[in-house]
Length: 217
Image (tube, rainbow, N blue to C red):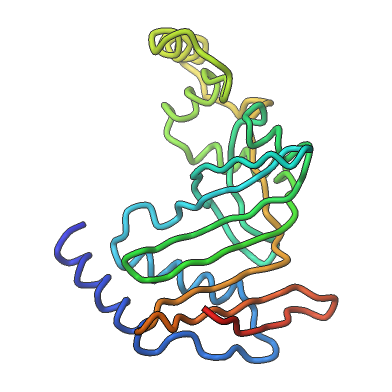
């Protein structure tokens, strides 16, 4: 992190610790607050501010977690992309529920999102895939994500094969690759405060919008 980024981070941290999270109004939208916090994280210079822990479980309840990147967020939910043959995808096929954790340590902020998961549309996945660097698109074709691979050389060989197969033409979206959308029914914001009297604000979706509560730290 550069000196300028560090100073921005310290300024943002100071505002959060000093002010905390005000009690939300009756019609507050947690996605709007999340966008504000994400923008602050991006402006602070944090490395990979869109990184989030994705927790899933299979049909037996066996959990697994990994870090992925948030690619878009709106009132419909939080979107990430992956190989549909991966372990996370297998979990979501069996149990379409997930939790996300954003942890911006230098800002003393954390957001936890829980909800149901749907696949993004093919059109959405194609539009996002087209924005990826060519090498990343080729890698999507080369990787049998989560399967065992004999060696690093085998992976590189598959990448070179994909490069040869797509020589002179665009790299289209593989049929086994695309997006998921976590549709939230529960979002919790955590802001560090002095003396460990941290702020925790919980939003829970109801038929009439979002219900809010303040939690003990």
